[in-house]
Image 1 (spheres, rainbow, N blue to C red):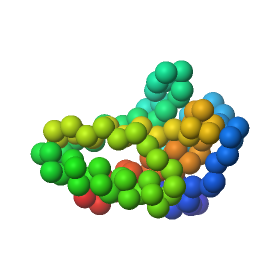
Image 2 (cartoon, helix red, strand yellow):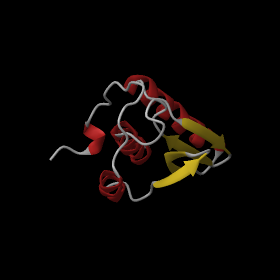
Image 3 (cartoon, helix red, strand yellow):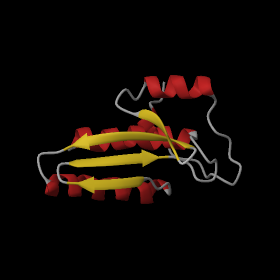
Image 4 (cartoon, rainbow, N blue to C red):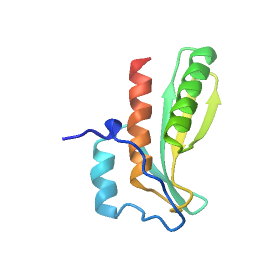
Length: 114
C-alpha cells in the first residue's frame, strides 16, 4: 500500500471535492499529531512542531516552503521562537482535500528527517 507521503498532490480547481467525514477520520488516523480545526468557518489540518531554538524552527519553515512550492500547494506557516505551526487546507475546496493530508504527511517526513 502506498503511504500518504509518497503521493503527489493533484491539481485542484474551484469546487474540488472535500474529503468525506469517513475519509477524514481514516486519513487523520494515519497522522496522529495533526488535528482538524475550524478557522473562519473553514476546516484545516493543524500541527505544531517544537524546536530547540529559533534557527532550527526557521530552517524547518524553509523546508516546508520548499515542499509547498514542489507540490504547488501552500499552507499557512507561523514561525515563533522554538516552534512552527503549519496549517494545510485547500482554498479551492474551501476545506480539506486529500492534498492536505498528503502534504501533512510530507511535512511530518521533513520533521523526522531533521
